[in-house]
Amino acid sequence: MQLLEGKNLIFISSATVWELSIKQSLGRLEIPDNLLEEIDLHRFTQLGINSQHAQLAGKLPNIHKDPFDRMLIAQAKIEKLTLVTRDKLVAQYDVAIIEA
Image (cartoon, rainbow, N blue to C red; front, side):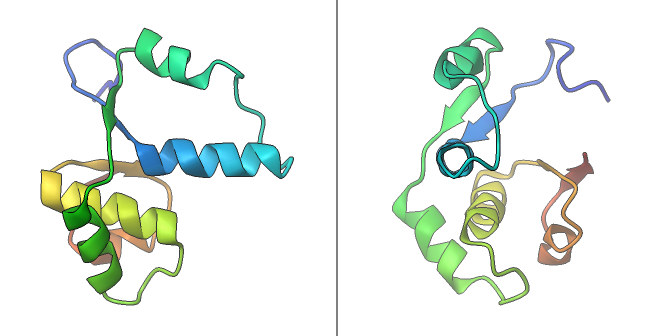
């Protein structure tokens, strides 16, 4: 499946933007200074964090320790979305994934 073929609605979580920004500020990752413009340019749909997402992220089984990944898992479960990831721990959460 080609994700960017124009037929798919692709979401990007606020948690992802937050994590990328933190990693950039720590010098661990290079991202474009115009990240939000790039997100819009590529027609990604921004997915905000709500209280349901936050509550489920806190209640998930303690398989994964990373709070950003736990948020993405919670959002995927609640919104019935498929996560694109290479993290093998995510697959243990009964959530649809596409391996990156």
